[in-house]
Amino acid sequence: MMKKNRRNFIKNTALLGMAGATIPQVGFARNNASELEAKVIGTRPKVLFFDVNETLLDLTAMKTSVGDLLGGRSELLPLWFTTMLQYSLVTTVGRQYNDFGIIGAAALQMVAANNGISITEKEARDAILGPIRSLPAHPEVKASLQQLKDAGYKLVSFTNSSNKGVKTQFENAGLLDYFEERLSIEDMGKFKPHADAYDWAARKMEIKPSECLLVAAHGWDIAGALWAGWRGAFISRPGAQLYPLAPKPEIIENDLALVTKKLISLK
Image 1 (spheres, rainbow, N blue to C red):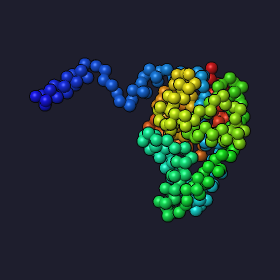
Image 2: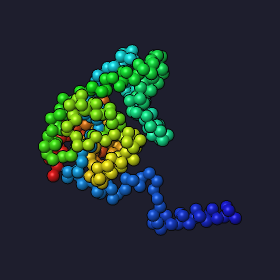
Image 3: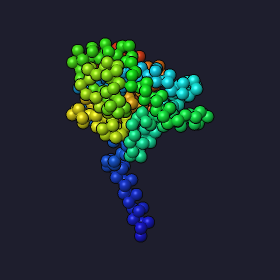
Image 4: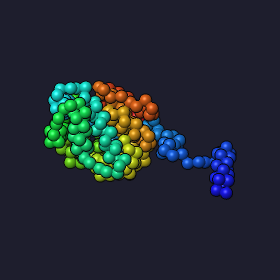
């Protein structure tokens, strides 16, 4: 009897599908047609959100510090960063939270151990948390941010780093006064590119996802934003690539100055 009922259920479901009945789409529902149509390309977004590390701040000093700890093996730097990103997402999926810098230090220990290099937890943290606090802005960043403010844009930073960390970074880099708000995922506990992080940021600013535009130098960050219904501007800094399986953002340029020109041209 149970097998017969199950067969009838499957048969009826299939018939409903052929008749055009709406069946929930797991995962893709968020990126539905109405959200995509709501993105008005060529018009100004209400808020410009900026990723911080590498997008605005030059990571050279931190990369040098981490590279030295890894015995000068520069080929391990990309592996370290991807391991850090991987375990930030493992933490999020596991419904846990640790400071992004602490995850970075743990990832550094893992990469070192896998390559026969012995480093302590303190050495790993010092190599990351010391330099990252005083990173300089990329050369074109300050002038570009000022131009965007003068053009009437609302600027908000949006980072995986902690609140205290990004405040210290902005103070040392001279960027504090350019932003009306500083948003850290520390306040909601899920790392970008989890879709909930972008949804949360939009709610914080009391706007729709389609009214948000993310400026970032990370393909994974742009992909996450676009999948969450945001718009995007990608800065293709050296080594940065867009994810081929994600939608393309409307702006793709080599630095923030070029991105700024296109943003200012929007009406």
